[in-house]
Image (cartoon, rainbow, N blue to C red; front, side, top):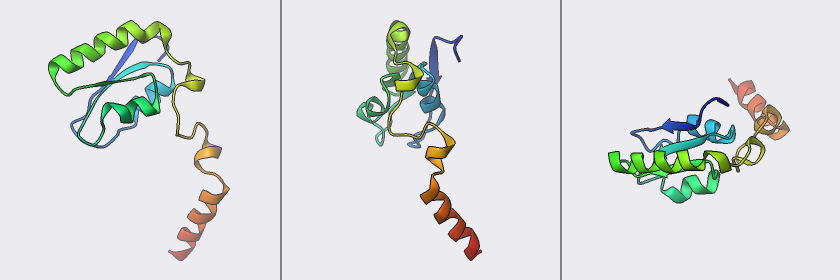
Length: 107
C-alpha cells in the first residue's frame, strides 16, 4: 500500500464495500463511486482520504485527478478513518462476545 499513490474502488451496487475503507484507513487516496444510497457526504464523513466520484467516465476521471493532487496532504493512517474499529479488541469487545456466545449456545 505504501508504494501506491491512488486507489480506485468502483462498485455497481449500493453496498458500501470494504476495500476503499481499508485503503483510506491505510492513508491511501482512494476514489470511490457514489450511488443514490451513498452520496459524497457519506464518504466525506468517514475519511478525508476518500474521493467520491460521480459514476460516469468524466466523474471518475475528475476524481482520479483530485486524488492524485491530494496524495501529499492526506491524513496519516492513525487519523485516516472514523467510526470504525481499528483493532480486533474494538471489533469484538466483551459485550459483542457475550452476545455471540449466547447465540451460539442456542444452536
